[in-house]
Length: 316
Length: 148
Image 1 (tube, helix red, strand yellow):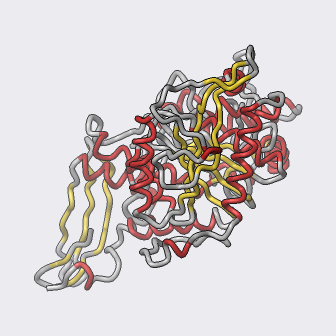
Image 2: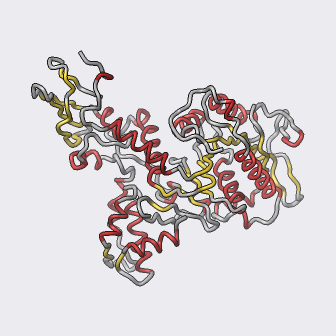
Image 3: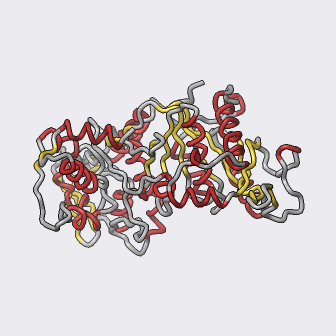
């Protein structure tokens, strides 16, 4: 009797072909993007979305073509922060045109489609059992977005990831080895511990770990015009002095908290409109570090012997 | 999933896909050698698994209309009627906007979950420019105005 692999095709269901077509559509759609960078953490509330947007802004100010895909479908925040809550999705010649911010950053966020008073819902034949299929459906949606948006020629496409160490790895699996990861932590042992788990998990795969950013590294007091501690840590991390963070990846910089930055995020105003401040300078520094790291020779040799997943390799 | 006619040792071919009924799909296969037919009846979990992959079963889109309606391509299906049926002008009286076939074709190319919002927004864009027809020039103008 024939076995599964003795039979060519699937008898007409076409399911496998459709999945393969989706992957091809995604690969082709991203062919013009030089760098894919996922901004993750594992820990929630560390400022991934804020850093993503403002790093994108700093890189855009250098003349780079940048887009953000807000991959946090259940808690999208980029639409509000980037000022594209009312974005219009216009049909291009074959795909949908990517909405842009007023400073020219392309942003796709579910926050442009779903009011904040509503949550993302999927029609389902198995409601009440969403734990069995929800993640699959969300990744199918991510694939549909990647394959149906005109990404065009970009220097950088940034993915703003949802929290969860296991989710971070799932995104690495889905996005493939072309995607590099930038992790975000804060000066708290709890946060560093969770981010360390993400580092450990990602290190098992082929994706490049660019480094991490320590966000909320103190706060900028406008009264004193000084950076003051925000978290009490037994061994405060100071990248400039090389104190260890426990994370075995490069630190691309530290960014203090600034209430004014939070206000800009809430109102969708780009960082460029924030006067010269420590947080602005810190973000500029991190953006340059990120750019330098991306443009430097990929330490692909570290992964050369690892199994390659299907997909395009990063351009060198 | 593949089906084998054991007596003939021959792969069975998909014949029809019935629309979901209470979460169950009916997929009929037949043996090209002996003509024996069998139906695969999915439980809601199996139906949802296929839907979650964002694919349909079988080559004929019309045969899977029920699957689409159940949300295969549109996570916001429940929200669509409200968006599509919204009055298009501020006074609450609909001002019909005509779409050329070329513009409709372009609209059909974008994801289903974006389409209702795109249609409403572009019609508003067209009205603001003093026209009640959406053609490809209007789409290009909107793209230049809003897109990358």
